[in-house]
Length: 323
Ligand code: NAD
Image (cartoon, helix red, strand yellow):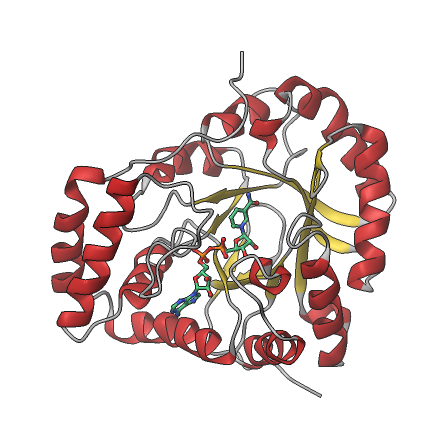
């Protein structure tokens, strides 16, 4: 039986009462989203993550067309620990087949996800990438359907995810307080893009928890670089390659610098990083524990921030134009 060690900082998630490890386990790589991952590597990565104090695991039926949920379910079961020792989020509304945020589809979706995850409930159910749907449908139909799922005990909390930051305020301004517990924002609190910062006071005032996903900008801030499908501009990809090369030359590591940048803001409850090997789990946990002990490597960070100067806060379009 694995048991988690308490060497990772736990942070509160908005008003939920949940305490998430500051490093969270993003399970999209378990759906082979960043290249093929063996079942053994998937099981070992989750086991090592839990052993090192990671208590939060995120997936979606979209990742690998349900493969990520199945692998995560298997890996969590193999831990053999009580259900309340880990926190799981999955999503609804986005599938391999396309988007569907109807009440009927999301209601069916949670049962399918729970079966694949081999769980009786998830801790957080997110509407996945809401900028691809009608935000008024999210407010008037999807979230009320999720509230019923909450009442039925299938999820403890409700979240929304997306890339453009405006979708969060649009929805949160229109739902009753306390309806949406959490937002998951991605690629907006990394060395190259820190735009979620402006939204944090608003979210805090509403008691909404903040998950920052993709601290490595979906592979941009790694030595191996991003996958083929990555939507960044050639200019941004070039700057990321230059930053990684600079770090390497100085005996530093761009991924560690990136993790520490994202982890340094305590208003962000957890930094959700995609991992597909025991080595990556160990590196990312070490990034957090070293940050807690030694603080940020300010010299390298300033040099890398200078490299990103011309592309700072550059993003890409996602979703349908909202009226
Ligand atoms: P990421 O920025 O976490 O980067 C993941 C990539 O970096 C993978 O290729 C991984 O193998 C690699 N990596 C991880 N640690 C490394 C290390 N120490 N050294 C070198 N390479 C390393 O991007 P992501 O996986 O897309 O995002 C993290 C998680 O957040 C996802 O798995 C998913 O759970 C969630 N997420 C959700 C949304 C959404 O809801 N719309 C969007 C993006 C991410």
